[in-house]
Length: 375
Image (cartoon, rainbow, N blue to C red; front, side, top):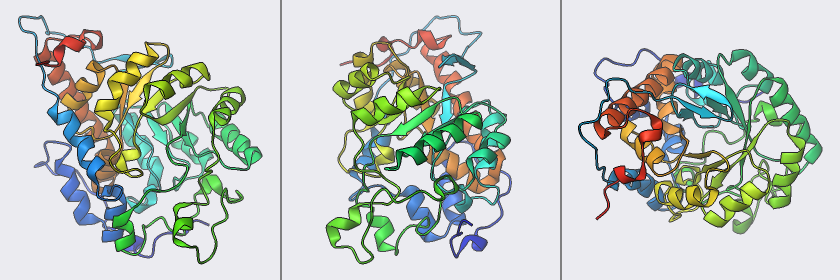
């Protein structure tokens, strides 16, 4: 049985998104009001001094747009095709842990909200819901985010469970062999998922045996994270999985090229929401080099700091095929359950259509590199 945080009952019941909310950012303060301090710090915090956390957001804002004029945008088409799946827009829900912290209906509420907004959702290994239930709850396409365990037989069984439940791809987190300096969590006595047993990992032997009273350097390791992952692990998973595997956490062009060579079905430019390594490059700056290295061989997705439809447009201009949004989906879930998740995605979708029209781009293919202002 999964252990809920002691303060779970204190979380107010989600309600409707207030009429006064007009942008995704408006939900951040509302979510903060509803969540206990430790939970909020877990959601909002980044690594160490949170320099990269600020960079992630700022890097999108600092890109200046150069719109075309006198273009017929009476019809705007935001649709994309991703891994042979036609989607009406390129905004995906990112994997985040333990949705029981935010809403009593957990990941199923997130899946319902995503489906209502016609968005593909990615569910986390560290979620609060058994994998089989994810498949039952999903009303639309979904992928499963995987933390490979040191017990490869257990991992293979977990992959089989996700495939059987209807997951259409595996998102392999590759940037978290151990934990970063989560200072916010440590200042408030640890984060709210401490001690919780994710249903997907029930019965899994620990990937790392952490001593009961570890020395400081040993506290970097987490029993759910295998620090021995290598390129051979990716190749093993690609061979094992009947569905595409997308490494998540790529920032270097040489690593991106090697993902292609290893048989990845796509990749995700990510720095884990700036939660692991501080002063790591923001994803908006890493994206162009990765996209150039991949050169269309596989889809490229990006996350980290996406808060506006203009951010989505900029990501597509810089070479992404789609974007993932994590914290905003959690804000929506906290404030209004499934309806809040739907509201977040639909708000970004509307803003993307507005940005495209004002840029003189009637289709996603029209979002070309010259729409970024170059001095």
